[in-house]
Amino acid sequence: QVQLVESGGGLVQAGGSLRLSCAASGSIFNINTMGWYRQAPGKQRDLVACFTSGGSTNYADSVKGRFTISRDNAKNTVYLQMNSLKPEDTAVYYCNLVSHVVGATYEYWGQGTQVTVSS
Image: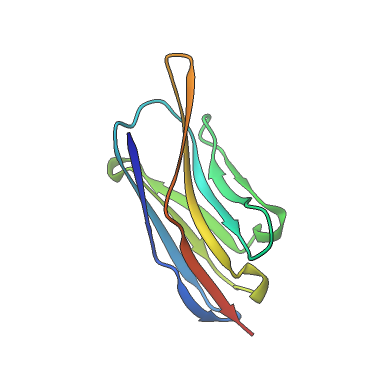
């Protein structure tokens, strides 16, 4: 089992910054992707940013140039630095990890952390 614990959400004014953290623990093997999704009220959960299996990064178009994903492999932790925040960034942000083990795919989610951007 893998546990993902997020932190760093909160309330910020438009134009401000927040940094989210996601610490993974447990039986972590063969990580395929690890990153962040978000879900606003009444909307689907969408990818924000992630590391791929090859080590590259993917970003949603709406956050390119404003958000940066980074990681500390020694701590099994992924970060999301969010700058120039906009009210439309308001959502619950979820950490996500996908691993491949012996031909099977496993997906894990954190509990979510609320980010609210006021105008």
